[in-house]
Image (cartoon, rainbow over all chains, first blue to last red; front, top):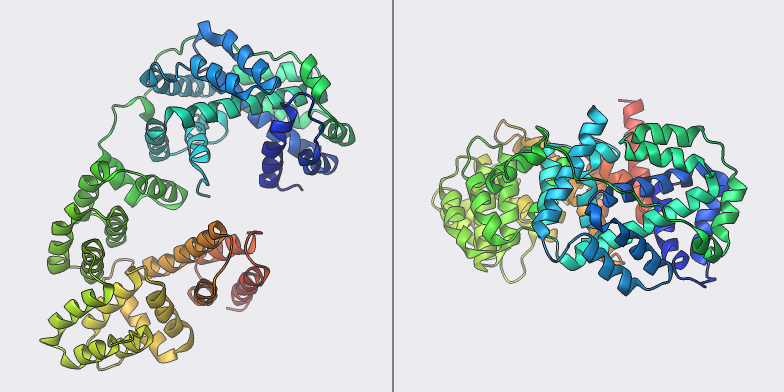
Length: 118
Length: 412
């Protein structure tokens, strides 16, 4: 059985290479690939965790700003992390209204509570 | 495990707030702590964490799309419906080719990335509130501190980590309130003292000094004395001298022994030996021993441990001392050493090396864990055994200690 903590570290470290278009440095993904050969579902579980988490984060973005998420991902795909960072701040209204972001965190958490408990 | 960086701490806080829906249940205290941490985060840190997690999630989606095909759509439908358990169950039932997934992870993903469609969710505004604690009015910091000091296990560890990050302005009034709360257990009040020492703010001095004079419980008096000395900038030896001066009025042999110990070269072993003499009144030994243990001084902790591990007479005497106040002092003291072992291991990991004094202390602590034979000690040993960043010989020593504990369990 693969070590989930180690797998998570490998996954985290492999991430930047994937998002730098043209990068052929795959060395950081090798441990993850090896783990996938031995226990593919362990790797899939980690990927699912991160996907679930992203869906929840998306729920914090104002509905009218959802297209900004495409811009964020697009910028990251091109390796332009400065632009991606700027778009992230805009999408979450981070510098304009911190209190509303915190309120959205609460509301989103509670909504998921309702979903699960309902 | 405590977070290793501000980013990690914030990520943990965000995930804790979503935890019941996301993966597991959390306690109200944990979520209060998480929310406070979120409030304290800078915009820069918060932005970085949100971006990193969005990117990581997109990466995960790309790979899952490539590995699972249309099954990903069903997974996303479940997630958006809040049915994460169903999503996980579906994933477990889905056959996957490990070699193909490995190949996917091993190849240059540029083409995969450029062709991927990032399907982002559109979520509406959240409906109304629940009776959950998250929506309750913000609680007083003093109440939160009290809850943390009386919590147990991981909740307590997470809460203590949070309290150490509070500013003096927020924390001191709450900690002083806890310190004077006689309904709290002695260990909880001792932890409040420890946190006050960490804040090193002189506004805590009057309360600590009053406690050092008047507290009913001996360990509280000793700890308050040392805490006040520490904040006041008084050397530990001088603080103990102060205590000795008080003892001298009714216990001259002890006072002489202690004062002679703190001559030009303080020798904690000799000091402890004097305390352990059968002729030393137990009440005085208690105060001094509590002071030694609570002082946080490696030298003193090491001296106490040497006696515990190698001197039968001292051990018997210490056993009496441990039965201090009829509450749960023995459990507290053994847990104190187990926590100390964890702390030392953590410090060694962060420092990237293990100096001789820390190595010596950790070896003595591991011996003590075998002697105490309690659950927290076993957990501390396991954390060392399983920590690849610590030296092999130390990990082997932890393994040996665990083996000894297991052998004891098999042959009580």
